[in-house]
Image (cartoon, rainbow, N blue to C red; front, top):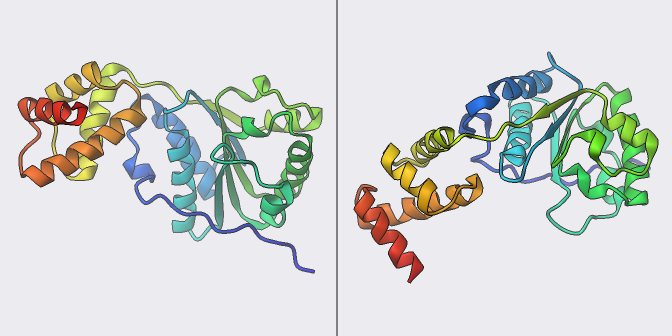
Length: 234
């Protein structure tokens, strides 16, 4: 009987390399791109704090692969209750690029650890690419299966560097431009100081501001920004 292949995943159209503000992480982006197109490492382990862009970059890798005619698959292990390992992993070794987000989620789950170990070996034997992400480096994962922990330390480990405040303001201006409107450095500083400091919160806010600006047909000046935020708070 033919092996089961995993279901397709939904691409997030705005999570490509072109939509990612690199800041101090340009070298990491280069490693990811080189791995995807076949001139880099076979295995990469990307780690960093929540909200720094790991999911975006793994999605971007898959979209670049598809553009190159390379089969790819992405799955975020933390988004919901873990499926049974066979549901997701059977046949996955046939996919040329596999990206698993938040691999720390399987730590301590014996069935998943063993199934992932077996998938890892089948996938690597085919010389396919594996990119993983986590909230800590591989040596700190609480994986209980020693052979799996060893394999997760293979390849190249990359740490996403957090953005400085200046980088966050530049990222806000960059993201607003991607959405099709302009914000000034003063508006960026105001948002960073008075609203949110994490990037995810800032992106959500930008989308709200974009809709408000379009509805009012006004530029996003500081007075208009204060008005929007006051109305949102009330």
